[in-house]
Length: 133
Image (cartoon, one colour):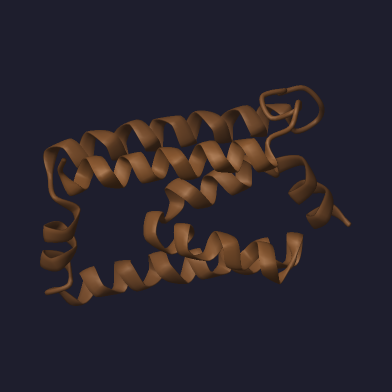
């Protein structure tokens, strides 16, 4: 079994676990004042995941990152990505505390926005409430 397939199987297990432990009945409810925004975020996430799957079938991620690392802008893009992921982890910590943040840290750092967006979508309502207060 290729590493690509293993990586996707691990992602699916992480996503299923996230939905199992953090899922709720309002997860796919798009009503209310921000229902349109939640629906838009879900659509962006699905499109992002479809394109990510397409990319993973066309190119090797490790080889691509290795070639990007040879360029100043490639390193800057990777630094920018991980700074954003660290910001996401800080928001998770503010939202649910240190221990929950630590549980999400390795998956977020390994899978990037594919996992970070799961957290955002699963906790959309409570994050909006937290940011609104």
